[in-house]
Length: 266
Image 1 (cartoon, one colour):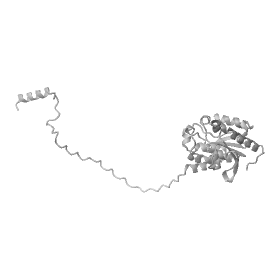
Image 2 (spheres, helix red, strand yellow):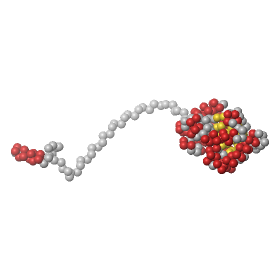
Image 3 (cartoon, one colour):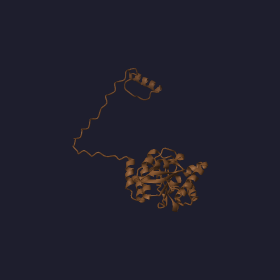
Image 4 (cartoon, helix red, strand yellow):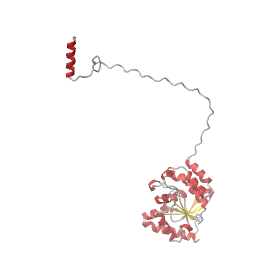
């Protein structure tokens, strides 16, 4: 092709908008694509020489409840027991604000045990200080009992469950050794179990609180020692169910008569 013809063809392509050369030869769009090149694999690293070592001893994993029971048994006083509880790993510990251990007079001879701390208890680090705890104080004041002098308070769980939910069986199992050790260290003459969780756990009973309340039971503690225990309704339940207050009053009268020596627990 002559030079003038080439220039004319180039000028025509520019008029059509082809102003950039992408390849020297035209591309056949109908031809089969070329096969993909085989992947290049990296060379395998040389295997290190095997150096003989002594076998490590097998680890003995202790289940959490067993570890908790051991820590509880090793506590020789209330301060050591509180420290052991604080050292026990539990998801509840990670979501709570404060450890709620106890309140009142541990030498009074009367120990009351509830279920778990609520929001106010978690905030202040003391059991039964919220609305239901204040109601409990008024209930006990009606039979002449004062917190700082006449009774001692604790819970099955020392940490507040998120959202004040009911404790799970696993949580109760984990912390039961601590409350049993707590009772053994305090050595009360009488126990009052506030609510179904405390009553069913410590009495090892399947019946609900309405069947367990109103009479004295024997709670089996450490070393074959048993404690007289009175199951009664939780004050939070009484605030939700005012009609049940008459049953709670009957339990308080029974407690007062027992403390006065007019009733002997079976």
